[in-house]
Amino acid sequence: MSSEKSPNRWGVMVEAEASYGAAPTMVLADDGVLVLEAPEVEHDWVNDGDRGITVRRSGKSGLSGSVDFVTEMLVGSGAFSASVVPPNIHDLMGAAGHIATLDATGGAENYIYTPDTDVLNWTSVGCEVYVDGEKKILTGCFSDLSITADSGEVPMWTFPTTGILGVPADLAVPTILYDQVDTQPPKAVGMTVNIGDYLVAVVRSFTFSKGNADPDPRVDEQTADLHRGFVGVRGQHTLEMVVEATALQATPFHKTTGLNPTELEKAATSIPVAVEWGSALYGKCEIALPLAELIEVDEVREGNISTWALTFVAQPSTPYETDAYSIKIY
Image (cartoon, rainbow, N blue to C red; front, side, top):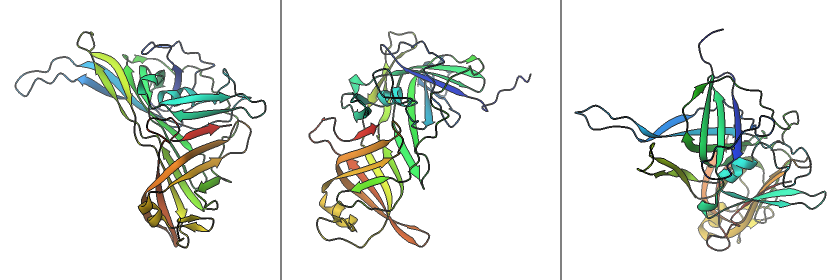
């Protein structure tokens, strides 16, 4: 057997922490997150030991790691409940600063995720990453979230995640069981889209971004390794869609027959915007921005087709309210 290392096999497990920084006990049958790209854990240090150009460095302190988990929303294994949650993403949604609300109405069970505006309430996660023939443990992790779909593909859910990094150890990938991997995830086809009153937009792609900034490190010189963990940082929530251009519409600039995006951007009108995809029970998803404002318009040509790249920002009904957007899985 070769002693060389390779990233050709990998595995990831994620679990919510009972208390911040307390590494959870991972269960191979329950905590697997099926990621589609080899997870690369990048190192960072609170103090890199630099003492200037004339003297040798001191030892480094405060090791952390950052990694992007690229995954998909898989179809639920059954009716959602407190113990049956959307596979693959549920704990990472908490780490990205969401409140998860269960509606257990029989036959219409769903989870709705809304942004928690109090970063001190965000649920940290622990992660075990197996790649390059090594096991890497991260604790006290927080995440960001983006959801992207282009030309009818399965939407990609990306969770950039940062936490305290333990010392890596040589270890092969264990046998992690992933829920619902034999069921095809929903593709971005047959979508329902609304942009205010315009309900028949020809959509080429969309990207939702929660927009969290990198979490802030808590530096503590009383600890041996200088690191107390992280605090999440909120950002601006956006939804970008590339749609075919239409005849320009008169006020209010969003009508059943099309849009006038420049005037809509100028007016800063708040309109409901949503995208929805999937058809299987417990495998449908809706991203809804009840009070979206158009903040950027780019004219894009896709071959011989004129399109608009529209960027909407999600606004809450009142400052610090948790209703700027919702992500519903049902």
